[in-house]
Structure formats: C-alpha cells, structure tokens
Image (spheres, rainbow, N blue to C red):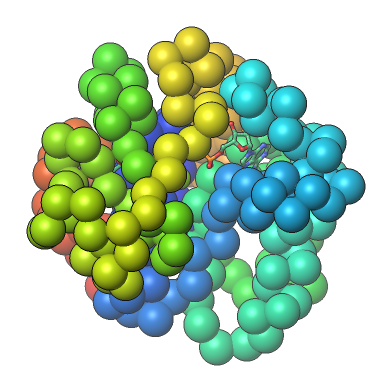
Length: 215
Ligand code: AP5
Ligand code: MG
Ligand code: ZN
C-alpha cells in the first residue's frame, strides 16, 4: 500500500507517518526530513535548499523528485510508502506518477488532514524533536512521559527547526494554498482522496487513517 499524507504545515503529517511506521511497518518518505538531513550534511542539495527552507518557500521540483526516486530505489519492494510533504506542486504530482510506475507501485489513498490555520501556528511554534532518534513532541500537546527525556530512546537532547517561527510558518501556509492544494483535483478525479479532521486529537486522527487503510 502506498499513500500520500497531505496538509498544510503543522497538520500532523509527520506525527501520523511515524505512527504508521510503528504500527503497520510502512516507510515514511518525508522530503522535508531528507532536505534537513542534506542541509546538516552540507551536500550540494543541502547548500541549495538551506536558505529556501528558512524563507518557507519551496525547493525545486527536480531536487525533491530525485530524492524520492532515490529513496524508493533504496527501499526495494515490500514495505508500503507514506509520502509526507511530497508531492507539493502539480509538476511533482506528475513526477510521482512516473516514479511509482518505474518502481512498480500504485497509489492507493491520498489523505488530506483538514485543519484550522490559526491553530497551526501554535502547533508549530511548540514543536520539538529528539535530537537522537527524531521522535516528535509538543510543548503542550505531546510532552515526553518524563520531562526532558525522550520516550523512545532515553536521550535528553532535543532540537527545534529553524523554520518553525511564526513569520516563516505564514509563508509556508501561503505556499501550501497557492501550489499544493491545487493538486487535489487530479487525485479526486481518480476517486482516491479522503478528507479527515486534523483538528481532532492525535489518537482520533490515527483511528480515522486506520479506517481508510482498512477500507
Ligand atoms: P516539511 O518538513 O514537509 O514541513 P511542512 O510541510 O511545513 O510540515 P511540518 O513538518 O511542519 O508539519 P507536519 O504536518 O509534519 O506536522 P507534525 O506532525 O510535525 O517541509 C519543510 C520545508 O522543506 C518546506 O517549507 C520546503 O522549503 C521544503 N520542502 C519539503 N518538501 C518539499 C517538496 N516536496 N517540494 C519543495 N520543497 C519542499 O505536527 C506539528 C506539531 O503539532 C507537533 O509538535 C505535533 O506533536 C503536534 N500535533 C500533531 N498532530 C496533532 C494533533 N492532532 N493535535 C495536537 N497536536 C498535534
Ligand atoms: Mg513534518
Ligand atoms: Zn529519542
């Protein structure tokens, strides 16, 4: 099974993708995570992407589609893919069709997390992750069981994203509205779009996704 999780910044794509990895053995393919890893490693892609990401704008279609293609090639067959934050433009959606065909995969569901933009700023400015294992947390909505210690790996080191400030978040939302939301009709025409309430609590969103995957 291969699915796209779609939604504006802070909608909960990464949170739900991590749960699907744990519970269903699927693989999260987050272009945002791949780009952040490239920035950290100082690769040519990272050097090109860094400033664009800090402004909250979109990195070039060619770069992200290459990253996705390489990840799918490395994955081989077997595990289902969760596309998190990709595709984000009409050109990327077309590339994904070609890439999937190349790897002998088909797209089963596109799940759109519907959210209220005002609440997203609070979600994003409160977000932090484990610096060691990447587990995601929130100052208010998802604190570690023991304060200052990662639930998953016990690390005491956490980090915040440089693009998680209010100004950049507003740009990221505008990019979503202008460039990403318009790709939905393509998938609607194929009858594979599901809309769920992304404002519900994290468990309720996971349940709604589980129902779609079981359908
Ligand atoms: P990316 O990393 O994809 O960021 P994004 O799309 O802005 O989405 P986020 O990761 O911010 O949100 P999320 O939906 O994953 O939310 P999360 O689960 O963490 O992209 C970053 C940048 O990279 C882009 O701006 C662009 O520059 C570039 N880029 C990436 N992909 C690209 C592409 N394909 N093309 C071009 N450029 C690309 O949740 C947020 C917080 O809320 C967490 O703290 C979480 O604990 C909490 N939370 C989650 N769900 C709930 C809930 N139901 N209730 C309460 N709290 C919740
Ligand atoms: Mg994310
Ligand atoms: Zn950890």
